[in-house]
Amino acid sequence: MGDFGIQNNGDYGFAVNIAEWIPEMEDGQARSFSDKSTTTFKLIATGKESINVNRTSSFYTGHLTNGQQLYAVNYTISASEQAQLIKGTTYSLQPINNDSTYKWVIPESLSSTW
Image (tube, rainbow, N blue to C red; front, side, top):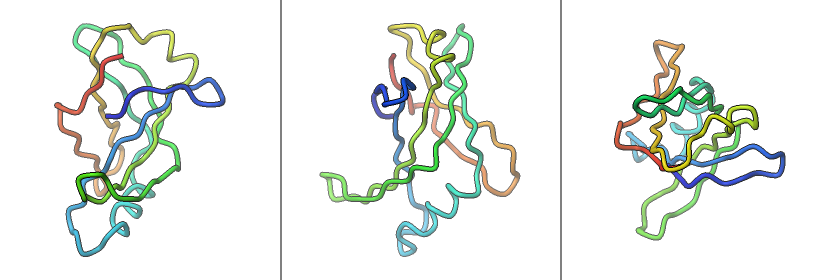
């Protein structure tokens, strides 16, 4: 999970790279999945209240310095949710999967410290 950064509207934002599962499809599968899957997520931390997060429609493609392909989506944390973030706490991203076909699978190890 990328570092948290403040956006023009005062919301915090971060991006997450999507792992492709059929490399020969290039960004087609990631973009299609992103368009059809949930936009609702939570940041969770042990013993803390969860923070509501929304995936935006932003989708980035490019190349990483290690030669791998970048397929990333952007997330935002509204100003009202920002007040609940606790400095020094490590949060992991949890999807609120509401579709049985297009489910996000995010490893628990994907985390960032606020």
